[in-house]
Every structure is written in structure tokens, then in C-alpha cells.
Length: 245
Image (cartoon, rainbow, N blue to C red):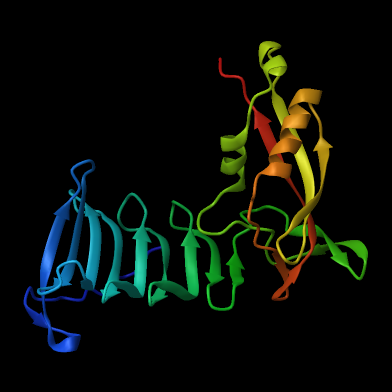
């Protein structure tokens, strides 16, 4: 997905709110090929006020937005590596994200929309996966189509969190044992995780490690939704143990 950014052209000495003059700052990161361009008050050089642009030296955009007295304000956009496809875009008010935000995949296609004001998921891209889940309905588990599964927001990926927290059991490592353990669990309408069990086993030590991860790591779930309501669902995720050759 691409979005047309309407550039706000500011002069180096422009009159803005509070009747103060502003000046343009260009800042080069010594440790990376990234440049920041933004505006500050002439009398308060640590206070950003106006258009903000982060880009690579080659010109590809990284992030654009607007500051109001050092607080993020209005539309902010982050870009994919090509500087054209958008990764995220939405509005800030007083340095807090508000209203609907669009979160895209690295290729610019939609992942999901999230409204930071209502705390609700909007559109969700299932990418060909089934949207049928076991849903707790009036005390019974019923298979239903839902609008979105349990999620982790702000770019967090549960698979990556699992990978970062794996401690390969020594006996399994020495024995050359690997494989994929699948852990089943419930995420309730408040985002709380419970009823953690093994859906697919591989080896006692690997199974035990997979359970440990889910019982000790805070996944910070956003609950599943159906018809704009939070629901309780059964969910499962793989824990993959790979021995490097």
C-alpha cells in the first residue's frame, strides 16, 4: 500500500504559533546512513516544532510526521525499505496515538487496523488462514468464524518472542533431538492467557521447555474479537526447536 504524502513546505525562518521563529535542523547519524530533518524554535533549540523527516542518505524515506512543541502531532508515517510502501500510518495528539492506525506488512499490504481511541481491531488480513476458532459461548466451546485472533500490538510477534526465550534442553541438544512442539491455550476476553496444554509433543525435555515459555513469559495479548466484541478463544502456537548444523 502506498500513500501520497502532502509535504508541508516551511521556510527556515517562519512565523508559527507563540510568535516564535523556527529554524531547520539537519542531523546526520554517525553510526548509520540516516538523516533527520526537523524544525526547532530559534530560542528553544531543543524544542521541535513543525515537519519532521527521517530518511536515508540515498533519499528513501524512513519516517515522516509533525511536532507541536516537542510532542508528536497529526499524521505520522513509517516506510518500508524502498521508501515508498508504508509500514504504519495514523495520527498523534499530544504525543499519543489516537484514532485508527493502519499496520502493513513489509511489502505494503495490510496486516490490520487498530483504533487507539476505541482499543478495537478494525480490518484484519487472515492471509489465507482459517478464521474459524473454538469460542466460549454461554459456557460451551463452539467453533465459529471470528474477526481477528488474539494479537500482540506494536509490531510484537509471538513467534519471535518464543524464539528469544527458548533455552535448548542439554539432553535433547546432545542427543540431536529437535522438532516442533505445539502449545494450546486459552486467551480470554480480557487478554489473559490460561489453560496451557500440549497439542503436539516431540520429546519430554522439549515439551517441558515449550510449556515453560508459555507459563513464564508475558505475551501481553490483545483479545480476539467477533462482531466488535472481545471474546474468549482457544488458540495454539508452535515452538520450534532447531539444531544448527
